[in-house]
Image (cartoon, helix red, strand yellow):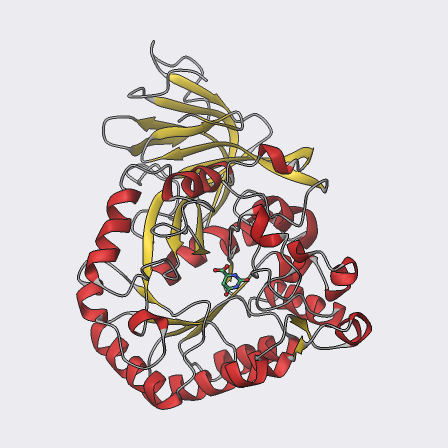
Length: 436
Ligand code: DOR
């Protein structure tokens, strides 16, 4: 580690890529203001004494990544993750902002808990935004005080982990959200249809004798909520979609001009239900890993613009919990430190398109686009990541910054890696190492 605090930063020799295109340029950042002060070729040739020079040779210099779907577990499950440890994992993964999911203990269904998480986030290694709960206790019966949470800056609301089952209540939530000017994000799962299931219902669940969750459990709620978005005019974001049918419905909704956005998680474009063959709960996740046809449809949705964002659904769980018998192990897998590399390795999209899915499009959905995902220009907030697209590496679970180890990608070879991350002008990751 070098002393990175309070020093101006020169990012030298990279290719800047943002929503406006690509150009070879150095980027100069002022520590005091946390903003980009200049972008142009050869600016960092001879930097003033005291400037911290970050080598970006062969690298892409981009707006920091934004994760719409992170479980930070604090308050309540600090044995799995804390705001600090999760934010360190995020920074190492190239993220400068994450949206913390509300299924904490207590849940984020009041201004008090939201304030607590925002306070913890104020010293974290990335910006921590909060998604508030739609209903009290995420129980799906009474609406949470969304306006009170929106007054603290909350822009997304979800009961994630649960879908809101009652269509009438969801309609009222949408009407309320529209009035407040916020977006509802749905965990699409019909609880009755999914009940008792632990993996995708299909060939592998039959073979393994594990009760399944049919694709229709997700698709029924996608269909219902698109209909409710049409009825109410509310903005709807669909979380972690996993089936071909869901992607088709989102494309149709968009073609009709409905205000619907959608995300998918890296495990849904890299893994299938065949991974469950060994009954290893590291592959247990909700929604579950699906079929090859679903993976192909999800990839096509990312390629053709139907899907707006890649979101990690980073869901840390302690080792003991994941080692419980398969039906008792909690669903969820880590994602922050592998999402970018998996996207670069598996999707083979032009770098601008990959970054759109990981940075500026999710920034817009989260309402974070004032400080994140914006073009790298003079005066912009210096929330940046520097990516070496050619760096080939093998994931070692023991080296993850997360407090948990439940990654399904241990031992996997990937191409493309974060070299540096700059948060509000401060280099929080330098040469792949967190600075605090
Ligand atoms: O697999 C999952 N894990 N899906 C969810 O919706 C919740 C998450 C968690 O919190 O562990």
